[in-house]
Image (cartoon, rainbow, N blue to C red; front, top):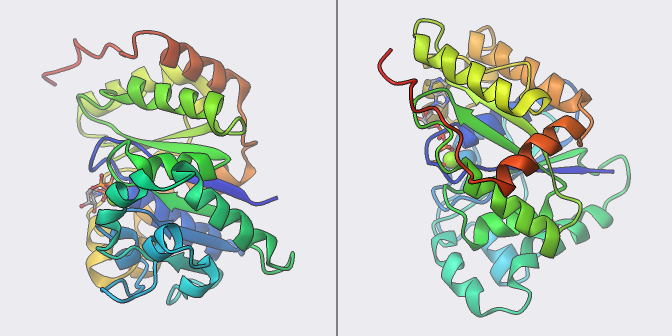
Length: 288
Ligand SMILES: Nc1ncnc2c1ncn2[C@@H]1O[C@H](COP(=O)(O)OP(=O)(O)OP(=O)(O)O)[C@@H](O)[C@H]1O
Ligand SMILES: [Mg+2]
């Protein structure tokens, strides 16, 4: 069965896109079939994967709003065998509003993904679908959570890292209850860790103490190569295969692949957080 993974966090700039594209590249490198759905009107994932996403390109907007099939919008990613991308064009910015009036508006992406996967022979069907979500909890992200079997939450290792996380987990819980009972929070991925600052280590420790095994063992260090790669239309795995960021994403991808989608201890921690006040106290961690 294909694992459909939403990479989501409504907080901006935490490493969602960087994680989605580099995990995809690393999974592809390891021989897996991967589909990346760029669900952010910014189109950053499409850029990083070297896939066209200018106006008039058939992308996720046409799939969700016009009912086009995913297969018609797929592009192979240059230099990444096994990885395909459904791009996002700027049109998608309007989808959030256009979808409001539509019937079964939360299920548009789920239906498209299900029919795409069902129409493929076993040896061509992606093993993993990664959905790069925009920084909001609007209808686009909601569509991703309904389409997904799992959610991966990147958390940037800095002050305020966990702000808004309670709200995200509550949304996940609501989606689970009302729209998609299969959804599990499978992994939290620590990003932009910095061994030189105490704060980064403290945030990582706090997140691990709070969410236990939900947090992936692999974490992603801050690395200039990771931030340079997209401007070359590449992931770090092709841009600088020996960079520490490339290696970190290879380890994270291997861990994601081998992880059971549902980690009971993680689920419990996440549920407790969703039910509680939704605040994780990092109040005394400033100033290092
Ligand atoms: N490990 C890292 N080291 C250095 N820079 C990073 C790292 N991860 C991400 N970045 C940079 O940080 C910025 C934000 O990352 P990214 O775009 O992946 O976040 P995002 O959560 O997708 O943002 P948005 O919410 O806008 O979609 C980008 O400029 C990216 O290149
Ligand atoms: Mg992004």
